[in-house]
Length: 88
Length: 184
Image (tube, rainbow over the protein chains, first blue to last red):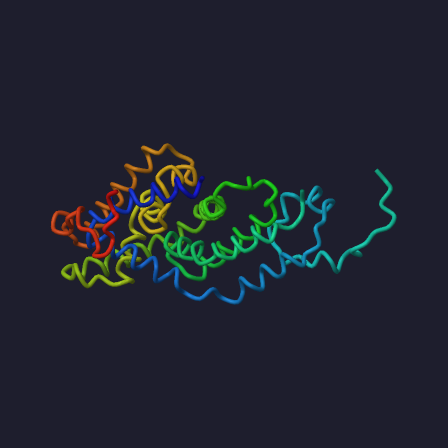
């Protein structure tokens, strides 16, 4: 449904922007040049890293402000399985 | 709830990376910085994937996150780059007469001279192809505001690139050969 709306509006826009002639075409051409650039390895590595990162509820609750970076070696700091988490 | 994104979302995330990178470099004008922004946006998106409403537009959601990251960093960065903007302006001004051969660099430089809100509107709608409504949501403003920013942005860009908009306008009725079904 969203896709339909998007498609319709985009094509409507497309006609509009075609009227921009040179400028509009150049903008799209430039942008598609950017779109076609190969994705650097660092992003594949990042996604892999995010995927392997343990989901830590406590860490989130405690450091919700500061957990913007993926680089923190959290798994090294604490054991992944903690059998004695009864204290509340 | 605090789990990793579903496989479907992950592959959508992956597919959006080229778009995020293209948008980021277009708004900030620096490839390294752009990739840092994309990285930041991806990590943020991943961390709060549980707040994403399935069925809505993931790409738009990601663009919103990226844009916020850009603006939260902009204030400190802007001061340092004031001179760079000046350089771009000088380069453009020294090269006034090549409307149809404007190259990539030129347009990137010209885009950089647009006010932030016009540049992003133009890119979201004109380059990325978001509907006005979606662009408005991403930029957290009214649809009419986006429309007027796109209009002002393209006028300004045409000026910067020394394109006469009147000359540039092509017949909007022109339909590429083969697409007969344009009007059913």
